[in-house]
Image (cartoon, rainbow, N blue to C red; front, top):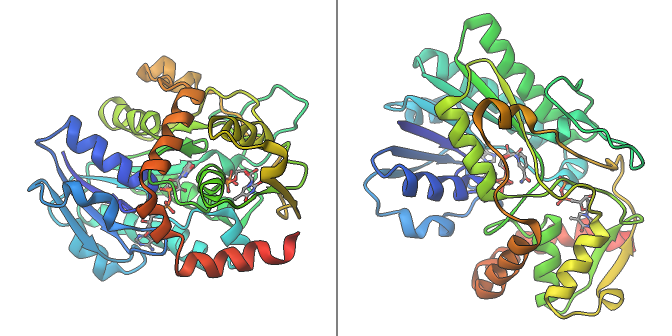
Length: 339
Ligand code: NAD
Ligand code: TYD
């Protein structure tokens, strides 16, 4: 395959590129990324000399940038997006531009270039929120009900991708995945923020009562699922991808992290004002991708949480550099008035 990976310098894109080049060394990858605050080429230092890998800096919103990047590829894996809910609440405009408009520009280019597969990476957050006291899960038939500017922008992009399949016959697939964790995760998100704050001797900010639930999945399992969809997925289909954590709350995750890092839980957390429109619970029924493509999560949550903590402990230069500069400004804006 000749792949165009958009957003390849971000968390999941980086992990995906490394996964793919190792598993399919004869395939070619063009990594197309705007290098926003979340994009970091340092992540890909170990592959930058690989003749099958090329980086092109550009914006998915700009048709001229996209036209250059899309030459000579047959497959698109579209990760590029603004991805953090809290930032979308502070300033939604960039989310609409990159996630909605950017996807439309890329879809048009895909048609023009007769791309064989457009795989769109999306999130379970498009389905809204589940009740804490129910056992319900999202599946492929759950109606869309996004609550944040981030999830609304991702929902918009999903609808556009589906519309291009129905209207123009573009060969698309979509996956909606639950929360990922693992190496290169930007330390604005809960798990890397908690680990790095503890390593810096800072407290972990807990939104509201901390009883919010996400369906955590190790990032490599997400990459394996995308691999299966690209190789065996049915054109026009959507696949939900989820984890094995089944109901674990933010507080329980922080408690686990504190335990692994030998920190006192009560002294390591601080309660902060809740996120507006905060979704209570996410949970994914991944039986379709299991039945149709044979996928299931392979990485145990606690074991890989420990390995992730080891990664952040051993890669302090990486996250300390990331946490300097723009991050400081964001952290101040996001957390200063919330105690
Ligand atoms: P990230 O924020 O770590 O990385 C996003 C990357 O996209 C960055 O490298 C950034 O520079 C690039 N980018 C942003 N706007 C761009 C633009 N206009 N043009 C070109 N590049 C641009 O995000 P992530 O966590 O790796 O998420 C990747 C994708 O996966 C997103 O589409 C996200 O919605 C989806 N997703 C993420 C999760 C998760 O838990 N992180 C779960 C499900 C789905
Ligand atoms: P996050 O990692 O931002 O992912 P998402 O909101 O996209 O699921 O947040 C995961 C959960 O952790 C969510 O319920 C919000 C909560 N949270 C905190 O309690 N404190 C924090 O500082 C952050 C960033 C998140």
